[in-house]
Image 1 (tube, rainbow, N blue to C red):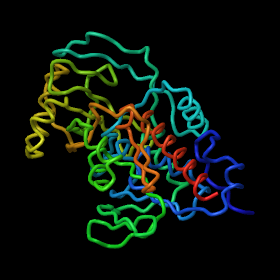
Image 2 (image 1 turned 120 degrees about the vertical axis):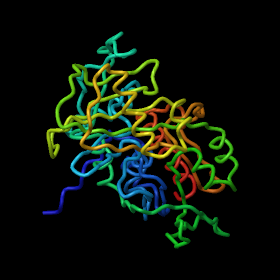
Image 3 (image 1 turned 90 degrees about the horizontal axis):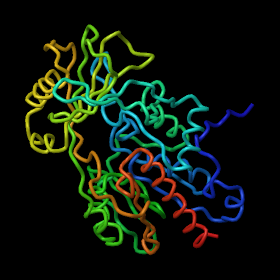
Length: 357
């Protein structure tokens, strides 16, 4: 029997309709740079509609800000801790993910903390998490993609006729493609698209926050009744207990995320200094006595969240056959990244329909 293909996790859309597949006679090649949720969504939606559809990711795993940080036997969701749903299309997508068992509602107790005191409790907002970890969503989408990891595309050369030649940071040739989609942070989009002002100008005007994340594991569970907290009047903005069903140990793992202002102030600091400062802020925010962690790590997100996202869901220059998408388009959330990827796929579909039919 033929092997069953992995499901995409997406409801039907114009970008994967049988009608479109039948009408397109010549299929263009497409490269997607960046395997975060926007890039993976776009890739999955275009599957089967183009030839040589390939997605390049500079790190060793897909996922972007829903990636998983591992330190020895300990692991953490060190980026996005959860996501919310507002858009009807995204509701349909999340419902499909729930049916596949890769996301579930998060029923954790979330509070507001101020100087060690719980000042408010937020249980009304419905939040979702990946199962068993946030990275699972990206891993599932990647099953449908020709993914090349550890491939940092740092240069693109427009061909005389049509299309683009791609090169990595070492100058190694990575192939020629008719259409290129860049699904990275806005600043990286601007750098790669300097010759395409329709894309580079909006992207370079987007300002991104910086965020230091601290990942700490404790041998015994800390005496904290809540699962996560928005922190006020502190170097921290968010703390969250990380729980995963298939964890390798029983350690109590916490992710601490600093405020944008504090992160900017400490952006050039040594990791050891940041680590101790975050941990001190944690003890002050929770009003707990200091304990020594069995594992401690930090990570600096230099392109954490867009401060002033553009008003369009995605960008596409037909004359150059190049586009860009990401959560810096419209909404700085997981939902925004997914919808931007869908928007990008629809733009590519219309372009292919127009020029290759």
